Image (cartoon, rainbow, N blue to C red; front, top):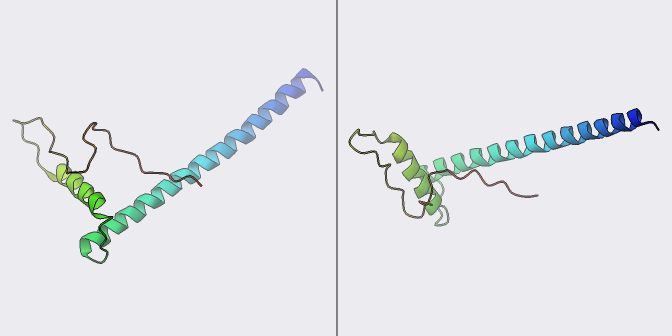
Length: 103
């Protein structure tokens, strides 16, 4: 097998691996989106009173606090963001991405 054939075969293998990785990445994105939808629906059920669990309350409180921050009008006198609700990570302002379980 000549050098050109070896390069061509390596390029084909790399293309196959890239397609597989892209497919896996797309599936992970879809999984994350599905978890987000599930979480949003669970929060709606918590707020309506249809679902109640002490395990959900810290997460629901966090969502309520974040929604309140978005809904609060910003006054020009204060540049401080609204206080984070108890139990949140106040060390940084970067939101955490949704958890993606490993399979």
